[in-house]
Every structure is written in structure tokens, then in C-alpha cells.
Length: 246
Image (cartoon, rainbow, N blue to C red; front, side, top):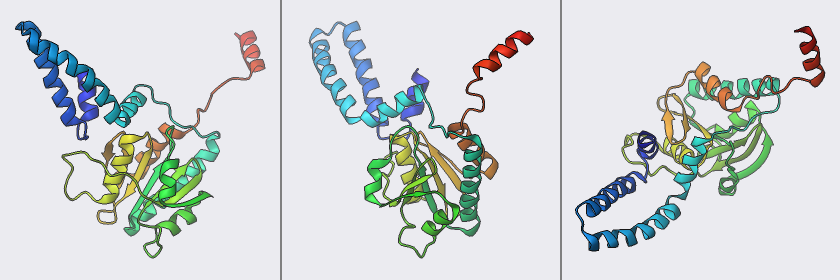
């Protein structure tokens, strides 16, 4: 459990608070063991206040932590439909990479991204490689922000995402990458980043940025999260036939 907490809070704004709480708990235990009744009572009163404050202040982090314990990805309905979409998306993303075009794409999972749509340009348009490429061409006014997607729909373009507050990030890390990490810290969205400097394709998930992903791994990651189950159920009469065959 301790390893999970450290891994979750590392490089987030909650790390300092987590360390402070650990010190507080240690002091609380020592006050009881060394028999300091006044200090012990003061710490009990502070505990009630601190617990409420932590829940209120770090509600987003706690929500993401709980979602990690029981993760269910948004699933597409048809395998063939999903494979066509994934091939088209991957082709566009790696075309950006080859051409050195920066891109930021957030794919909605269970947590809604609707709140970020009004901060950009609402589109609610069916996804196509041509539309995505037209958004991120540097001569268009939409290329600086993020594209928000829900399944095969582009919800919005030029959306403004929250930047990560985590410490320990490289100073050279650009705004797109910080925004990708920031959104993935407060939601279960999968955020794709293409760097115009290094041409690397990266994916942010659960506050962790994985860099320089090759196309096969890119597809495997998205398929593991969004692809529909290939055998969700067996038709009832097929079950009867199989039973008689046994």
C-alpha cells in the first residue's frame, strides 16, 4: 500500500502534503508512546481538521487514485470499426511526427472532457484524418491548443488544458507535454503528444508520460484500453449445441 501511495503522489502537487502527513502521523504515535497527553490531545483535534482539508483540496487526485484501483476503459462497439479508426489515427499522428508538426490530442475515457470544450472551439464533428491534419497545420488558428475526442468524434479543437503542477520535470519540457500530464493527473483521459522539436510521439496516462513510442506500441496501448471485447457472449442456442457435442 505504501509503495502504491508513493508511486501515485510522486511528482504531483500532493507529494509535499503526503510527506507532511507522514511526519504528522509519526509525531502522533510518538506523543502517545512517550505519554505526552496535552500534545496528544492537540494532535487529535488537528487530525479532524486536516482530514477534511485534505479531502477538499486533493479531491481530483483522490478521484484518480480510486479510478486506478478499479479501471474500466471506454469501449468501442465494433472491432472492425475500431481498427479502422485506430489505423487512421495512428497514420495521422505519425505523419505529424515525420513532418515535425506539434499536436496534442486528448481521448476521453470514463471521465468526461466536456468542461474543457468551451475553452476552445466546439466542433462535434466526425473524426477523419483529413480533419485532424487540417487542425494542426501551423497556419491555422486551431493548432496551438488540444483536440478533444470521444470515440470517433472530435468534440473540440484549440482547447486549453490544465498544466501539471508536479515538481521534478525537466525544464526543457514544453507546454504541450505539461498539459498532457496535467489532464491525465485529473482524469482518466489518454493524451497523445507529438513534439515538433524531437518528432517523438508520447502518451500521458495517470500522470505518467511515456516518450518516443513507436507506432506498433502506440496501437497496442490504445487497443488495450478502447478496443471492444472480441467474444463478449455466446448465442444461447450455440451453447446448447456445444453442450450436446460434449
